Length: 262
Image 1 (tube, rainbow, N blue to C red):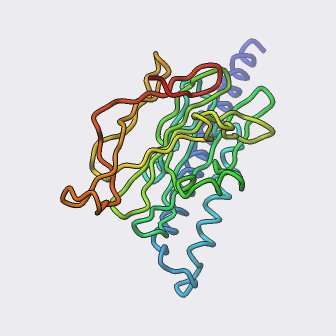
Image 2: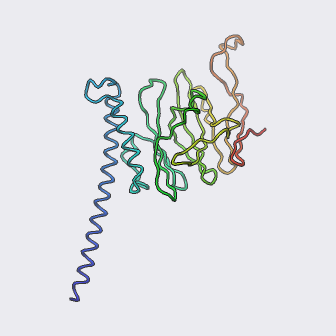
Image 3: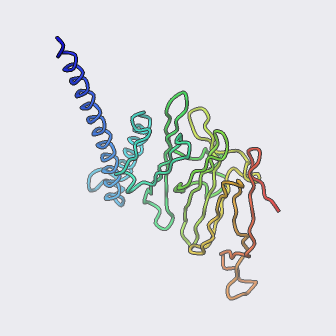
């Protein structure tokens, strides 16, 4: 009987190890499944009618639904998604509560169509969904959507400053800052917190290296002042592009708002 207890312990350890190994394998398989769905979507990105099989939008919807369902599973809370991250941009907040997944939906030509999903951990549970704008916000301007999010800053208790990038072609690109908080099971943009606007949008000529930046210590967004440029200096022939004046402007965060500072 003296040997039964050590033997029993060994059996329990072996079973636990096998269970952990199986769970790790399941997670990796799901990661690979998501990657394969997205790769299939990529391979069929021009097949709108489903002439080769499934139509591209059907595959894309399956990818989004599978990703959102996966992100609600507690097993994937800290999972790195090493396979999926080769095609999808994944960023994580410093407090580890929020992750944002962004991907190219490949149907806009030079007008890049991006979409994003979130995973957010609260005391009540784990939530996920599409990181989109509500109907009212989407009508504000054409730069509201089509953003790949690539930077998260914990700016305040329960508030996240998220930076994104997009381009609608025509030689221009734009950067977007959003201030998000979690309400009623979703991440919601602030209301009028960027000098009266729901988000800060900064459009520049592509390749001009005028990307705005956020200073974490000062809680400031800095960006260059822009002015209209003209064809060959002709004041009657605007080029449709903007040039930098060299002056740096700032949006300072205080009491939940970003305001211009002189």
